[in-house]
Image (cartoon, rainbow, N blue to C red; front, side):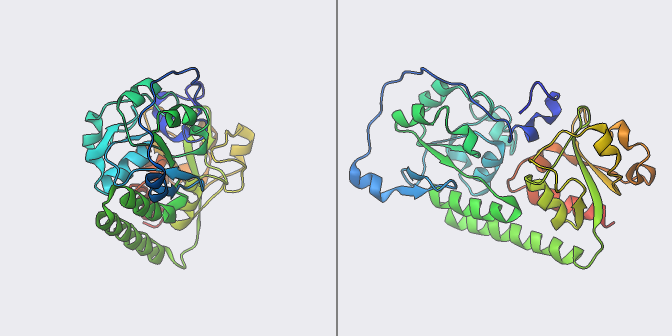
Length: 303
């Protein structure tokens, strides 16, 4: 989704929508095929309902999503990541792991050379173009797709089971649950604030019905003024945006998105000084730090 639409600062969030790979004709030597008994013992269902043959515990893994890289570190499996994307910049240790391209254009030859047990991806759209190539090398492809705040804990537990770090995963999931429940309690019975989330200033992108951020805003005690707009990250016309008149504007903070679009200059949000910047990484990745974004948004809406 992106490079032609917006500047580099907003690439990370929009990449979840338009991730498309064009990889064909790769030829590699096949690796050893697991026995039938091994396959039965390690048949695991991923978030698309696919049955995946996967050795456990995972010893070598590649992550093709920053949110998954963060989640793998959160459950104690970071030392077994042998490849990540160029966008995987958290925690600090992720920066030193070999890069295998970005989420749009991973380098399949480099991935195969790393000999991972599994490649983790976050969306179905990442599967079709390269899954068959990797599976011919008997490299498993596993989809973990966190559906909103509540899905993050489930994803952590899945990863804990795959890496053999169940205790760390359970503890992290419990911590996130406690923090989320604390936010739920703090905003209960408070009036909902009309919120506009600006992902990109020009062109003007926001969140729509299918975005996990729409739920985050709701859980923080707000209501997204674009919650019924089709798709996850729609581009709005100035005419449509002008009619929204939000009470609060939240900016996904990046170099080219630090001010509201000019169409909001007379909005209640701008006139009342209720424009807030949230770190682009924590607001764009459906991983453990999304709870940080939830807490920060709730604080800004109800201060």
